[in-house]
Length: 395
Image (tube, rainbow, N blue to C red):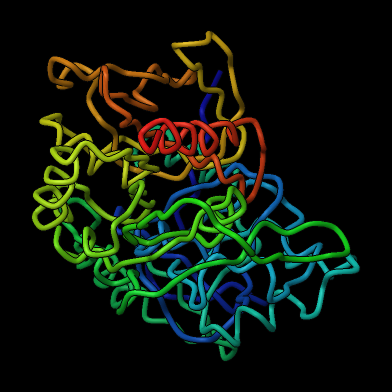
């Protein structure tokens, strides 16, 4: 089978008729299309997400800091936008790429057209690209650096945009958690959304959990609150003393963006201290990688990463396969796990590590997103496993 590659345009800067946006990659590829969202230009690492739902949750996931998202699903915008599906107040993604123009909303929860929401949040995007070709290009060549420019007048300096793409430092070696973390400690008591009732409130929490915010999604915190946890959220750079002063029953290490080794410069000593305290610990995504580094393992950047809501993962303890939601560009190396630490989950796509546990201790983590925002719900049991560890430790 012949693998198509993205078409190259002339570098002369001549704009095809009707085009109001351009994507310029550092590798020399130029894609023309129609601009969506805010006018201007934006630069980042171009990745793809294969989810069929949840574009608003994806765009507001702090783990996408520094990245431009190519959506492989065509009907982006079909449920509009609202204030309930935000994973954080301000989107961290740099931009978005679509095959078709934004679909007009047709959903009872919609309060705003997606294009209006993008403009209100300063997000720039481009529609009309062959996202299948783009996805194959990323698959074969890795995630490129790119620059999207949106100008209704159709005026673009291609060489200047390419220079911006080439100048982008990339995510390797970059600590982005400090850019998306909370600025001060706060308490969280909102529980998961239900039909007609909306979000609830934890009325009588039984467990005290400190969540270290490397870029936490709100739905993760809701899942903890929904299982009777009084959640205290602390900034990524919180010290061991900052955390222990809250007398937690358990520690949660959140998701987040960037290179875990860079964030680990300040996070690893703290997590290592928490491990030594013997407290129950649960990590997700970047939290999983930070925990692995604290235990003595290593991480590395992946060729193209895992991003989507259709990734099969096998639980090595039970043998069950769960379909998971994922968003990560770095991975824990199985062969680097030290004695006393074992892999707990594995990707059935490429065999990479998807989880670990410390033998004989209430400490575990997973690479994927069991909070299911956007779905699926196969992995909710992990939150209950964390609570069971807390209850056992307290007993």
